Image 1 (cartoon, rainbow, N blue to C red):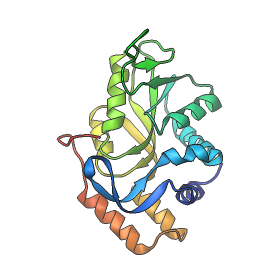
Image 2: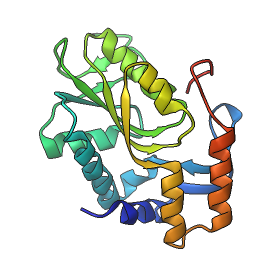
Image 3: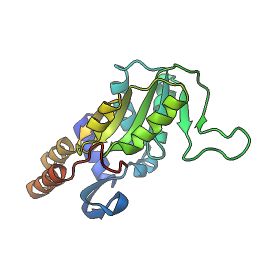
Image 4: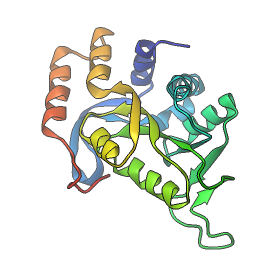
Length: 207
């Protein structure tokens, strides 16, 4: 398995980490954008990310995996195959015909489901998936995440009974990329300031 430092550089070189004044959700601006969707075109990187998430998940009791749509779905699928752990999928919206399901796959009430997510910012997307899984009778108390942007999402999730364990925090990722010569000290400082001033909480419109 590659080291986290090697993986960070691979993600940057593949375009999964983008720098600049970038528009994120709901018109917010960010100096760094993490787009894990690109790794579907880089099988070795996708496998490496999944293996590192498996390392985290091996310490968490679970019977099912569920990836938050859409970026985390392929990661959850790879983890499912590698560990022989059944996977279920949350649809973006309820199926309007036939079974009219919001959750696809086979599961039983009270099974423990581990959620897989690419990025946590405010925690809203992950929490939406958690709430739907809970409404279906599943137990959800943990998530494994590729990146925690350190903007309050982890605290929001914790307040809702979900412990999110990340591979990277944004500040840690920035330092790794600086040490690898991919970004400079000024960019690290800009990212640190962005984390400081852009914080989310329970009262925010979560996303």
